Image (cartoon, rainbow, N blue to C red):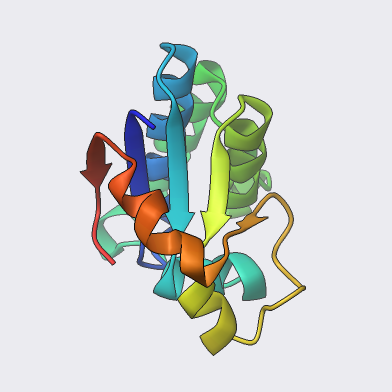
Length: 142
């Protein structure tokens, strides 16, 4: 694997940024994977993403969503409720061929065994070290 992006926190902006970067890397011909762990995995499983204070105000969010839609970045909702679509970014990355893997340790801690969020691929605990060391470049932290 050329690039591994680790998603660890539950900030929607971080998850979207990581997934869109992975999607662009895949489009550029790189073998790229994503590992969702900790808060990011919990948010993907249970549906709660936080937004940084600086990106939450309407004066920032609305123009950002308008630009995102023009760039093909998924946007959820409409009107005053619109925001970047984290689940749409998962679908976009998955459809581009990016493997989005669930950390086996956090899957077990969160009780997700056999019930992973849509679009995520199970990773066996014994395979985790080889998965991590197979990447030429790792972005993020566990």
